[in-house]
Length: 386
Image 1 (cartoon, rainbow, N blue to C red):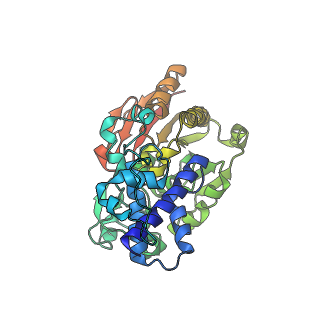
Image 2 (cartoon, rainbow, N blue to C red):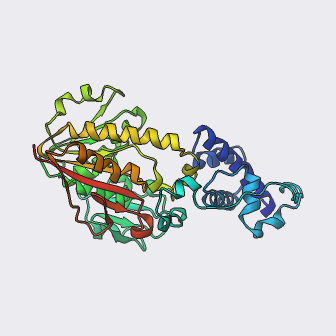
Image 3 (cartoon, rainbow, N blue to C red):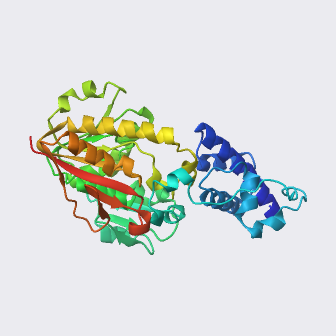
């Protein structure tokens, strides 16, 4: 493909991404893969170049552009000469046509996220792995990946792009894909062998597997979610990692308390990895900025308050509740914890979190791309005294 043809392909794909963002459709990665499935003429170099152009545009525009053409016209002077109207190229430029203006975040989101994070949220995210302590030592795993460095307590950060799911270390259950910040959330739970732990909102179970490793595969972990598709991935992941103590439990929306009656005031640790805006992961999914709206954020915050109260009801006296969100928006993190402690003035206290990463934020800890190089998170640990 010529540079002009690559640009035209990028415009077409970006139009599809923009439409999907309007309707909460497929993610950009899925759209790109689908586009190339029907265009066998594109070689690996073409695919890589087009993908890079599409993501360059997505990262540049915090507000969803009107069209792919308007976005690329506003992206940089280096692309303008490619709008030359030759075969397979974008049509020539009309001086009067719309041009989109780059900005890291829309105005309403920029006001909710610390300005120091705006640029960092547009960087590319690294690939972190968690070493499965049940099967390997970190030093031995580091030797398997050239240029990898330690990160956090059990993690390694890869230096190059690796198809990790095809790597022997992954197939043998020595490692799992998990951001360093996400690994820390599981560590804050301080799960010990023999405990009873509930992973509320477990999703595909990455934190459940980390908890099981800390428990030396002894005790009980109940991994719950209302999303069947995500939860059903967990058993195979657990088998690959050599973990047998995780029980999956699909919850019915609105009936979660009934589904967890046997856990009420009986759990040593409850992890509430709450549904959130995902603003902490925008380096990985930059088009998600285009999907978040004020009404969607309000809905998410309502769900977070609900699962926080639900999780608290499961903790035994002397146990702990760990709340985590992959977000840099205070309404989703410290504001919820402050409101919870104000409501439950007796019986609950926030415990300090001691970690080599993050900064104290409200009654918890904030991790961020700019400060810590990992995804953005807020974590709080609450102790129940009675």
